[in-house]
Structures are given as C-alpha cells and as structure tokens.
Image (tube, rainbow, N blue to C red):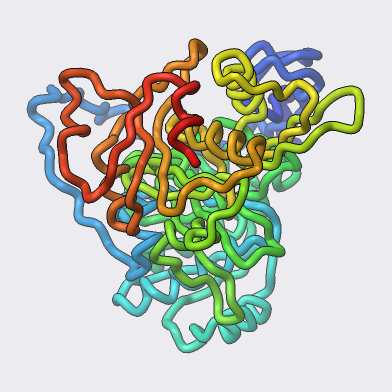
Length: 458
C-alpha cells in the first residue's frame, strides 16, 4: 500500500508553514520565498515519539524548582571559553556560522582534541568530507593522536542510533545542511529538513545532556542558511568574521543563553591551526607610537571587555560633482550624520570633500562611544595635522553638537591608562559624575560641545 503523501508550503527565510502557496510570506514579508514540500503521511514526527498518555507532565511552581549553578567545562582556549560564557554547559546546543574557508571545521576539530584530552568523549560527525580528509586536517593541526572519534553519516536516524549506543559527551555536526531525516521527502539542506533534523538533535541534547556543535552554511548576505527559526532554537550562535584570505579571524557571540552576548575572540590563522591573540588592543593599535594624520584612538565595549581601536579617516577635495562618503566598520548613515553635525556645529565645510573612514583591523562597531573619535579623525585629516601622541577620545555626539558620556566610563579610562595613554578627551561631567573624580593616571580634557574639541586636539 502506498504511503499517503501530504503537501505543505514553507517559507525558506523564516520557516513559516502555509496550507497553500503565497507569493509573499506574511510572517517575514519576503517575496517568492515559499516552496512546496512533500511530507509522508504515515511517518511519525519526532515530537510524537516516546509519548505516553498515561503519564502527562505535571506543572511545577517556579519557587519549587532548584536553582543550581551548572558546572562548565573549559577547553583551555581562553578566548573561546570567553565567547561561550565561561565554558561548555551540559546540554548546550551551539550553532557556528561563517564564510567558506574561514576556519569553522578547523576550530571545532581543535576544540574536539582539547576536550578529548580532558577525558571528554567527543564524536565528530561529517557529512561533507570523508574520514580520510578529516584525518588529513587533523594531521596538519597536529591532533591526529587525539581520542576523537569520527562518523561519516548524513541520516539523522542513523546518527541518533549511534549517539544512543555510544553516549558521547560532545558531538560536532559538520554541517547541519548535509543531514536529513527520512520522515520528510525533501532534499537535504531544505528548510523542512534543517528544521526537523535540528529539532531531533535538540531533543536528544536536552534529554541526555549531550553538548552539540552545529556548523551552519551562510548565504551570500552573510546570514546562516536555512530557516531563521534555527537560530531561535539553539542556545548559542557564534559567527566567524573576517576575510578568509586574511591572517586574523574574529569569533563573535551573537546569542548566548549561558553568558553575555557580544563577546569576541581574536584568533590568528597559521599552518598549525587557529591560535589566540591575547592582547586585542595591541592588535588594533597599529600606529600607536607614530601618530598619523587622520588617525584617532577610542576605547569600545565588546561584550564584557574594553578594546582600544584605531579610527582612520581620509578627507580629500572631491573632483566629481557628488562627494563620496565611504565607511568601513561603521554604519555609513552614522558617518553621514556625524559629518552633518561637524558642518553645522563644528565650523568646517565638508560639502565639496570626499570622506573615507575605516576601523583598523576589520572590526565592526555599532556603539555610540566612538562618535568623538570619528569626529576627531575627520578633523585631523581635514586640518592636515596629526593628533597629539597618547591621546584618546571617548564620548557620544548629539545632533545639537553636544558631547555626552557613555556607559562604563571608568572601565574605558582604566584601559587607556593601562596601555600607557596620558590624555583623554571626555564629555563635560555633570555634578554627580563619579567617573571624572577618580585618578586613572590620565589627564582628562572635558569638552561640552564639538566646537570646543578643535582647540584641544592638536
């Protein structure tokens, strides 16, 4: 007897289900993203397995639930442990995304070897490469002698059978787009396959306490391929940033249920794998001891730590009708807004000049604490004068040209003093500002308006 086949329509962008085809998804607003999938009517969904109607779940009072600190397993990679929130938590479900060739499989194979050396049972499941190819990478990374076990399989039912029998503590899936479940009649990598396969693995992780690392492909716009619901299902989302042709990589925590989001790890790629760069501020400060025209320094907050970055600007007279505004590392609209404030309240005319801006090291910053640093770099390039040596800038600029304080002023000033800076331009403090009265070993230069900054920069 033939299986009864049901048809469903799923949005490739957000995973929303529909009974019939639509041109536009009502959930995410994307056009032409709804595709048809076929579901076997006789197959059982994973949510219905092992359910017994005789023993329904019993709700509990929130006050009666035990609140115990979950132990964390550290890998020995200080930078990686930081982005994970201090180490691995039992039953964690972690998604790692990044461009092709940036080092996703490399870092997870290195982590697998580290955890196996700590007597953790690690299983590496690969659906893209053969076991021989993975062993070649392990030999290059000098971890071929580790106790990591490898499984070449793409069927989610077969993978779960192995996990049930062997009971590994840590499982790496490389990648989630290659695995499939036989209960859905669609190709691996489709929205329904990714969603259902991830849900089956998630259920196993939460019921057994197994830690899962999932490698996710990314689309051309840099987002993880598959339904957006995948990022909501997992506990932690990690993104690899940077150019695959560059030596340095940035691993950023986008979401973390077991720690702060926004943490970054700075890594360096070598023949033997990825290595930690412990002093991030020294890496981003390229021209620290030789100030250049159009360069300013500002402390930023990334997760729970302060990083001092170098801001670079080039202001040149435009030879075309429409001046260019090019920004790398910040939102171009942010740069345009600050240039308008400089023209209105700073007393300089930039309407016939091209302005190019860059944050050294390839870092992307969205917080407003670098506003004063951006304005200082633009003023330095426009005046063709370098800023004073060992001078930092921290503050937010308002539309009225006023300079405002930002959060964690104490920590930012302490980091500047720790790196040997001697001066810092700060907002004019209010009467109750406690950060201004402390002695950091810095000379604090307060400015209330952007027009006052030009007199103290050079």
